[in-house]
Image (cartoon, rainbow, N blue to C red; front, side, top):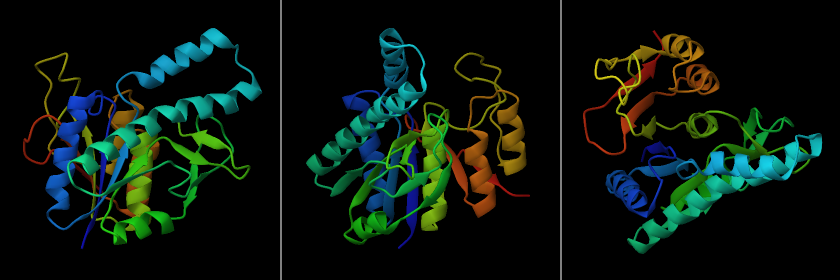
Length: 246
């Protein structure tokens, strides 16, 4: 039985109706006898809203960095709980896990932490029970037992790192577009979808400012040879993007 990791971005889980669409996609794969791990971002613009509210309360201090991670990590936790509720209501066993419950350990950097190692025992235990495991992306735990967050693209990084740690067959990154384009297809009709990229090409595009996948995410994929496939949550076009090493 293959393990498959799915990641859904904020636009994919933005409201209750979209959560139901996501749940149906998960169930399709679950029925094919896959072990399913799902990584989710915070809903919609939740993280931006939390950052704005925090700035209204306090100026940036070292202590605030720690508290910001506690605050920002809450957005993903809400998404995991809601998605797990939807799946269980639909009759499919699911469990939500925070980054620290999932065994994701990072360095001590606040708001831009780096994953050091992952203890996958809890995830594997739940998968063996045939549960769909819903993980909060973008977060982990440091050596002081404090919550940390991974910075921009953090949920993508969580997904690829989890896929590597579990030896997953594929890591699917779902968003509101169906692949990697030469520019933003939601803004320019002339945008062209790229059929496939190497890890090196993906890193180059990201470093030039393309809002696709964070460099750190692609670097993990390259190191552990994790196939990263980008797909749209809202259409069923053929397989979109497979980043592979040339």
